[in-house]
Length: 72
Image (cartoon, rainbow, N blue to C red; front, side, top):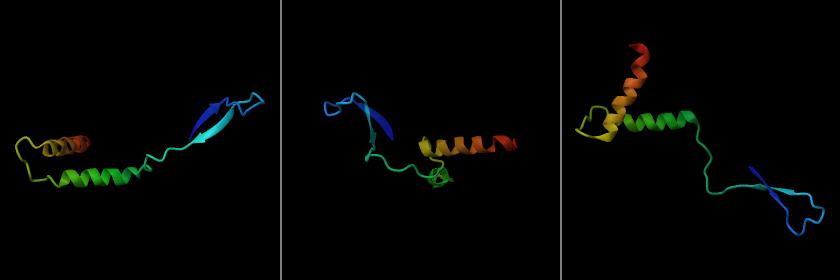
C-alpha cells in the first residue's frame, strides 16, 4: 500500500493525514514455481516441432542451451 499525504481543508490541525491506497486493477502475483512450470510446459509443446523460423522453437533451443550450460 502506498501512503498518500493530504492537506485537505477539513484537516484544521495542520497535520497531514495518511490514506492507504489500494489498487483493484492488479491480480496477486503467482508463485514463481507456477510461472516456471507454465513457461516450460508452453515451450516443451514445441519439442520436436523444429519449424523453420518458429519463434517458440528458437526460444526452446535457447532455454535448453542455458539450462545445460552447467553440465558442459
